[in-house]
Image (cartoon, rainbow, N blue to C red; front, side, top):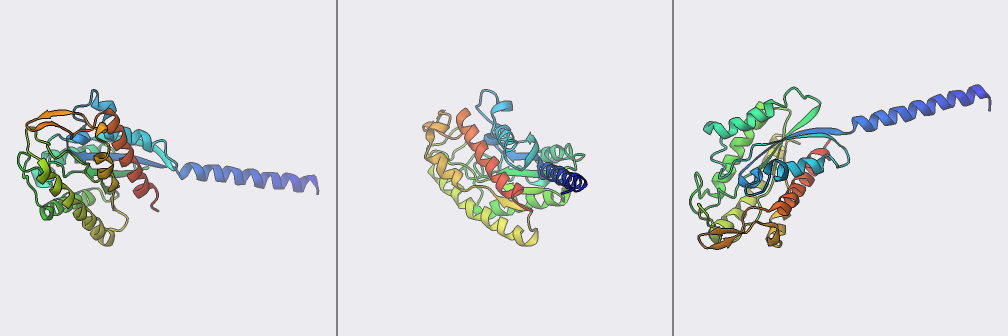
Length: 262
């Protein structure tokens, strides 16, 4: 084979390698994530929520996953909050989510994601705003929150993370107990219904997380803080290890729902 031919083939191979390298770089998807939730999202009871809360861990783990580029996280979880508190017409908490998302607005190279996990306080017998919230109203509230997010941020995606287990004697300033735990699990089919509706009306925009998170935490009480309540020591908020595990669940769910999608 002539030297010129070899040289030409070399150029073609190099160009191919460069194109493949560029393609690999552009395949990485940057993420800007706003985490909406309650005290569990906020990181209540952790020594340092700013570094240990589940959203922080989720962002760190996502950044290590294949196909993921830069990850930025804003945690607007509010202790004690319910879906009623997060309704757009109730302004303050929803405004926090809006402001967090707007701070990402200039970053058009990244996918904006709202990761939402609410329901624990909705399920309480009494205490949190609006509780107890029926499964039907829980669904209505989720839709109201999601509709506004999708409208205001048309390039965004929403993922509903399933709530975690809590012990049947949970009773701090609010009363949860067995009745609340049973009600909490009735919210799961409502999440499924809402996601199914949006799969038709807004394809590839709204997703569900990993439902197994509830059973996993139920089977691992060592992942919780031991808190003193009106009916003895109860488990509601994850400890440092539990927050890391929960963040891992959320990261995997976001990776599956967002990164795996076209």
